[in-house]
Image (tube, rainbow, N blue to C red; front, top):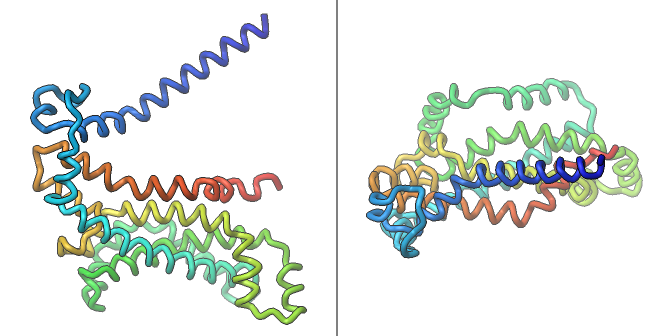
Length: 277
């Protein structure tokens, strides 16, 4: 009797999960189906219907007339340098905070943590003025610098917490053998925190690539805009052409999906690192 009850509970559990998965995926399914239809078909039959004939015209229009061929490379030009600067600088600061004892160490860590709590909306105007003053407004460097600065606190905090768990005996043994600090950092510490770095890299790539607010504030010229701000222009140009807008949005999500697929193993390792201690 108990065995039968367990089977019924498992079946109900699977049914509940299947329903929730379908509900969660429903907007994406509707978006994909809509992108393969013509706008006339969409206006006559509505969103919740299957395409009569599969058409890739919306993707072609989004890529050429919608200028996604320009906006997507801009996103990579901004995201990759910002990601490299963020991970490089945060790993160095995390190494210093985790492995050295010096005056003001706790204060510096508090500044990094406090920066994470600060709502960036209150800084929109000061950052806009600052970018104009130093001459980087409406350039790629404005977005690269602001993303590096804002993500530095979170990355330093996470990496420092991982580095603190590494036994000091490893670095002390290396120093006795004559190893200098940068070699200890690059060849001993960094390989040990690689899962955490990969997990952070996945999150940071997603956040920076999908940023919209800073792109809207710090970039004015359309040819400099990343794909998120470019999609806003696309929405203005094709205000009634939903198929083109949705096709462009789907194309913009492909890079983040590819990054997650390739780094998901390290992402899970980074999230569960230290959980069995």
